[in-house]
Every structure is written in structure tokens, then in C-alpha cells.
Image (cartoon, rainbow, N blue to C red):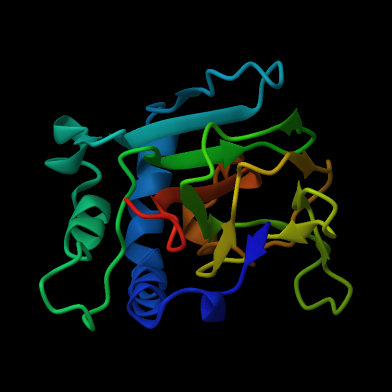
Length: 212
């Protein structure tokens, strides 16, 4: 259900690492769009509120308005990682069976158990803003946002790190209420009410064990 970077083919793992290195530029675009009110509620109706998204790629098509404007850096990074004739080059095959989207989850929100639509893809979660519980400087900080996949122990997200999962397995999301550790997720000058939310970039890629 969960994959490690080392489980991926080497060129794909290198592509994911390249994506991770671009997380700050991607976060900047995602936060700006979130604060501008560009996100809409997730259509799956698995919670009443608190789970919003902004789709950049949907089953084979980029949102040209976003990719040529406020999300241009994000789209450029992913477009630049398309597979080339040189099989050893780092690449990410964005799946025509899935999406690329910013995903926001507010504290206190629980997402009902559900499954993805296909096992022909893997889902990358790139942490962009992941608040934690506690006080700045405290050694006792705790994860505030979790995902459980199948019968595996729940995992949390981290800024600049990719969490890899097969979302065809049942999974659910949990977000506890509480005060985040000040300054752990962004520059203080950037902080707004929306910064209490978890923000990630979701990228669906072709499953490396299943032929396209």
C-alpha cells in the first residue's frame, strides 16, 4: 500500500527526487492560489467540509489557464520530467488515469475510508505546508494530519517530502484539532488563518509494475 522511494525504478525515483527539490516554488504557488480562494470542495462527498482541491491535470489534459499563469512553475517542473528516449534520464509519467492537484485539508476534518478508481497508478503526495502540534522549539511536536492505507500504520506528511501510496487500497485521512507549532511551516510574514491547513501536491503516476 505504501511505497518507498527505493521501491521505484531508478529513473522514476530520480524524477521524484527532482520534484522534491522544487517543493518551495510549488508551495509558493499553492499557497497563493489557496489564499486567493481558487480551491473548490473535493467532489467525492466524503466529508461535509474542510477538504478542498485545485486540479492542474485531469486524465490527460493540463489546465492551460493555470499552467500558463499562477501555477506555471508547478506545471513546468512536471512537464520537464516527462519520459524521453534516454531511459536513464529522471522522469515521472503523469498518469492519464489520474490527476495532478493541490489538496488542502483543514484541522478537525476526517475523510471517510475510500478507494481509488484503478490500481494502474501510484499516487505521490508532496508535502508543501504540513502543520504539526506543539510549540516552537519543543521536542514533543506531534503529527496533526495522518493517512491510513489498508492495514498499515498511519503515516503523516512532511514539508518537502513525498509520500507514495497505492490508493486502490482502502484509505482514510484524519486531522486533529489543535494549535500548530509556530514557524514550522512557513515564514511568519506569510502566516494567515489558512495556514492551519495541510497543503500537498498530489501527482498520479503510472504504476511501474503495470504496462501502460
